[in-house]
Image 1 (cartoon, rainbow, N blue to C red):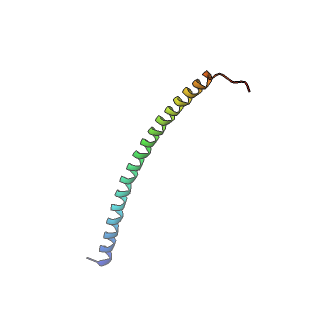
Image 2 (cartoon, one colour):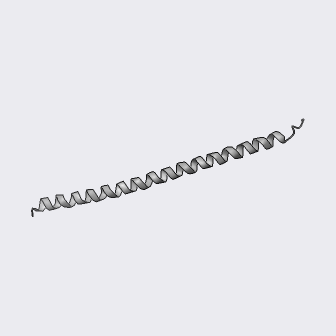
Image 3 (cartoon, helix red, strand yellow):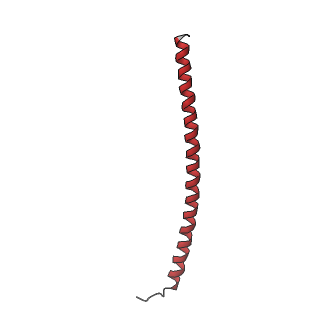
Length: 66
């Protein structure tokens, strides 16, 4: 077989392999982003609940005169 054709075939196989690896990595990263977005939403909700509780507690503290 022609050496140039063999080299081209090898390079093409490398490109295809790299493409597959990048697609898998991209899929994994998308899943990680989705998981982090869910976690972020959950933490934001917990923060809002904590803020509400703190505000309620602060309203119960009597104001002092200076």
